[in-house]
Image 1 (spheres, rainbow, N blue to C red):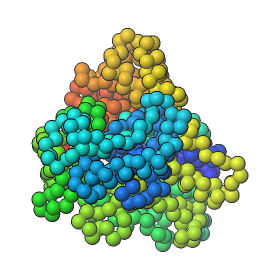
Image 2 (cartoon, helix red, strand yellow):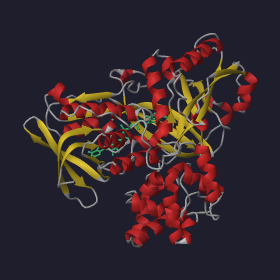
Image 3 (cartoon, helix red, strand yellow):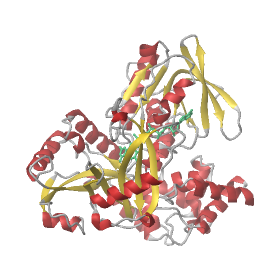
Image 4 (cartoon, protein in one colour):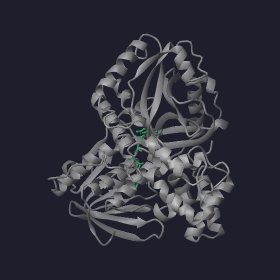
Length: 545
Ligand SMILES: Cc1cc2nc3c(=O)[nH]c(=O)nc-3n(C[C@H](O)[C@H](O)[C@H](O)COP(=O)(O)OP(=O)(O)OC[C@H]3O[C@@H](n4cnc5c(N)ncnc54)[C@H](O)[C@@H]3O)c2cc1C
């Protein structure tokens, strides 16, 4: 990276930075992408995995956002058909006001009209049916155990869900690299290079070796989400600080399967303030994920602290919204915690409000510091669209307008060139090695799409690598080797949290972690004490309940 002068350096390898790097590379720019930790090591890994179709924005009469979200849901299902799938959702109706059958029926109708192009050129598995309102009896079949007598039926619609938010980011990075980008994880931006009021690049610290690298660039994009202000402080110039406050948001992955196929939105009130909180319960890899708990975050971005009180309040919220669930601490397998920028002034409210619209700041226009943009995204769902708009601005700054049309909404991500996902699955089943169980094969197809063949090829070099890494795991040894050789995984955490599906429903047992660490040790020449250190750091990364 220190040998070139890039058109653009992107700081931050979450979903927004990864898509921005891919967008820039697809549009012919020379680009470098850097993250201080692993790709998708922060907020983007902690989302509720819902690719919103936008129906929620009808309540705010934000029709533009409804249309935008539905378009992005379609784009993601097109470019990553293995990772993004329709998700049936439901919410009970009651009373005469906003959640009544009549209002919900009108809302679903309007949503269908606004998103009428959603099924254009989509294969049968990706079709999003029209929304409908069903009877109480039908609702109780979808969500067993509900006893609330107020519910007189339910609205039913479809969003989509990402099978692995981490693999989608890693695929976007890989796509950027395939299109010519240079990418590095564990490379932290520690300074900006300046020529007067012009940003001319960055200084990055290699977190592994401690070395500093000078990276020259015509434009720099600060895509660091919650870290945006901290990165701008490195400028030592007076600039607009885009983050006015941060909310801590939590999801739980529960050990139990509470739902059949439908995600469900249920509201409950806390006794102390009688405020209604809406939670989403989502079927997730054989168990249940639920979100989202929200409170104001004080202090530095790096210091996310989940308190006992947060866990207790969230458990109460879950039981208030879905009393038959009867959740206790023992039911919580994983806590996802992330920080989101909030609306200015909402830090005074009982619960802060996450930023409603993305922000794209040209610090040249705003602060007289040329060659620098900051992007604050608000949803995983719309990150590709925000990336397209960001790179439009970068192209304008570079004076490269003519002929650049974005193809990022229709160009498949690596492994995603699959016109018909159901056909792809049945053809793969017919030809896959016999030693792969149904659950292993399915996991490979959903994680890697057509790239599953690369994993199988690695497995063929050593039949042991086609075995799972533990008796309860659906991940095979060849995936671990692939992560190290082809996907820039450096630590055990990179492999178990972000390259494979191993920890999606909870931390596996010690033997499984050990098996993965030993496979990595073969590739990276780790000794026994390094293996132990890696296992300990994976355990330390999990928030204790
Ligand atoms: C609990 C929760 C649930 C959510 N659910 C959903 C959902 O269901 N659907 C949805 O669409 N959205 C959801 N969201 C929102 C979505 O997850 C975020 O909007 C999105 O992930 C933010 O991505 P990002 O790339 O901007 O930030 P991040 O993913 O945080 O990426 C920023 C990156 O910048 C890097 N960085 C920071 N400083 C430096 C530096 N000095 N040098 C180099 N790199 C640096 C960090 O290491 C990090 O990887 C949810 C969010 C939370 C917290």
